[in-house]
Length: 377
Image (cartoon, rainbow, N blue to C red; front, top):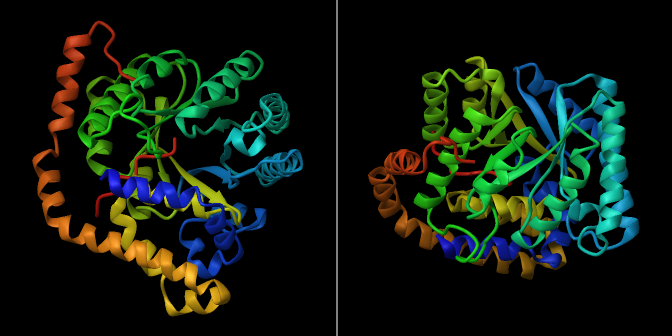
């Protein structure tokens, strides 16, 4: 599936398409994956989810921030959400990217912006702040920033992308921090990351299991794959892992019925809820994680309504739509084969994971942008 992932990652990095999507967001289907464009709308969404015993991680969307003024605006928006969470007394925390805060051009500025956000969050009931991981090139700076802040703040954590070879070592470094465990949403080189689904799944399971047995803070298991969810449930039961030591996470708009069902079983559950108009890159990475969502993209982006709204940008929209349609067609031809392969490998990853445990054991554990291996209910 490398072709599909590269295709959508390429779209996510297009400044022109991001600007177009920002302008015409609602008409292009943004409401399928984003909880509105205002703080009021996201607070209403949080309240609705809280009524179902589901917590929320709020992502104030923002990419391509390359000016100091832009970083200040991003910081202030995040602080506004923190204040709203506190004032409305809802169960939610914050996810952010330090590239929103200036890390791409001024690392010290990003650090100061993030520190100010953490101070405000501490004042507002010690609301948790999660530093989302991004492309591998930014990982060193993210961890460096986390290391500078973790001594001063207890309400900060980050994401472990388990397609990286170094994922386990990174997770082992932070047993006392709240971590979100994901597979990874960016296209990385074979010298840096596992490339096959089987290898990534194995590492994902190993890291989750190890952390459940050794960590002293919450582990957030971000996946839509019910096989993995069931595996984690059974592992926790077999090893007497308290439900308070972990939670499941899913993305807003994906597998809502399954999320509510898991929450009703008494498991901690969080929905990752993005809001704002800077939604296009976020959605493209979700498609990159799971190409089966191409059909959704095609239906949302290429409709008579879309073409009418875009107007003068019709040519560009049609071109993108044509590319998506082409990939969708190619995917359709391979769908039967993929489904067959998926059945053949359904539990293979878990068996290999257990073998790896036995080989490396003595430390039985193995160490967010999300696994989006969503399977139909």
